[in-house]
Figure: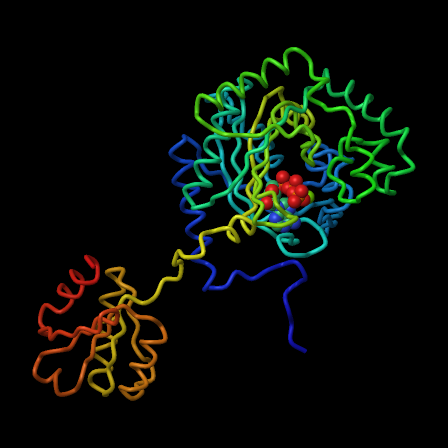
Length: 419
Ligand code: ATP
Ligand code: MG
């Protein structure tokens, strides 16, 4: 029986990879320019890092984690997100001892046991950026600015930045109680999941897709009307700094974010081209996360971009596949050896050259060059080779020219690299 990949786990094939590499390269350039450094964290962590960090009453911890016992009986979880691991690494390696401010990013796969569908997978990739150690609202705006700048640099259009404030550990409980009281009256309208959420984490009900739950919550009190004076000042300053950077945003008082650790500023960037899985990226401030995982009191803010959703929005007219720069067509025994020698030299120069390994007919080699969309074809005929001359054909405009064999490498280099 043929073995297939696991449901919700995807291969990223060579004709797609150009997009991924472009997005990753742009992220690195943009983030490094904003002063961020890459960090690589393990794929698996102790389960309690996520259950405590993300919160027990969240979708991720309740039902989406890939958790298993290893051979010594330790419970491990494949990381469902990167923030908690990055915070753990910051504490474990005392990154704050050099400078309390750490600006970090991380690119890699995340794992959540969700129902696979378009835009939702069990292994998916995120680009994550976090700033640890700054509570000042100026950094909230800076992180959002970097995110929007990055999304524009990769070519995304028609995006909407939504922001909200979720309050802090002092004012959110008041809101949670108010919301709970309001929804308890309407609990007959709630689905079974939301009745449970009503007890454990009523804010989660905002994210429920069930129609009657949405109706129940439509006129519910808003967190923004409950936040304390300090949170209000903080949020106003975030908006002021966003304005200074000419960033358009809309206030979305119903956006709550799915992880418990968020406090104050929350944001999402949505694209209506994505259909129902419309969030390309989400993030926010989390001033309690570090304490939840047993560390110091360190404020943090960051975002995670879903790479599959981002890639599905890339401009359709942009070419991401890398074709050969040159195809060496060499139909004879001697010319085949010459093709091998020349290809090796070109490869060392970083020129993407192909030749036919099997020594097929000239016609079939030309067909292959065409199929591979090579920019140039170098024709090495037996007769021409004896005369020390070869033909270079430009496959775009079909022009041809003869080149001398001596100094061929340099001639090709100058043509192909400067083209
Ligand atoms: P959603 O509401 O779509 O479930 P989320 O709030 O769970 O998203 P986050 O934890 O904020 O998502 O993750 C950030 C981003 O990662 C999302 O905006 C989305 O683009 C992407 N993402 C999340 N879960 C998946 C998944 N299962 N498959 C693909 N991308 C995902
Ligand atoms: Mg989710």
